Length: 163
Image (cartoon, rainbow, N blue to C red; front, side, top):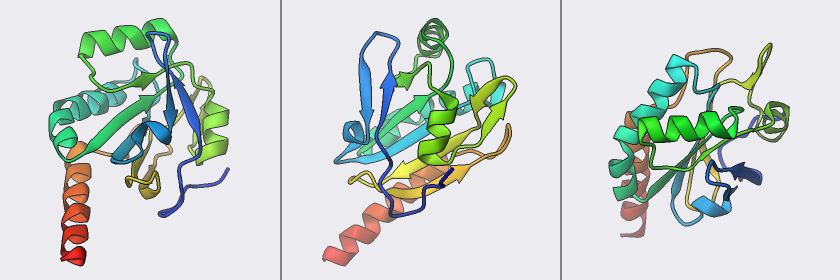
């Protein structure tokens, strides 16, 4: 297991979406800031709260040029139900192999039942990790308010360095 550190490019990960399409990382977020969320499952209250919070902030994130994607071990039907019920407007992948995700990203894995622990990344427009947040349990995860503040700061810093 290798943790992803700032400056490293997130490895290729393909998300299977509930509608049958796929979403390839990091390509799908290239050219904009990205938020990648691995969550434990739709049955977990903290996970649902995190996804809902990112949905409530989705317009603000989009206005800053940021995209959001999420992924779990939930099956296609459970993911479709979650996306529909909570009105999630960002891509949410299903049927992830928790051990493969861990091997690629360093996410911690719960073994019984098997799922990745909450893990989040903020990516720059080139797909490089700006921040990685690893949790070994139910709490300790990215929150949209912090992500919005970070992206605003990075944009301002970039603007002043080119002025």
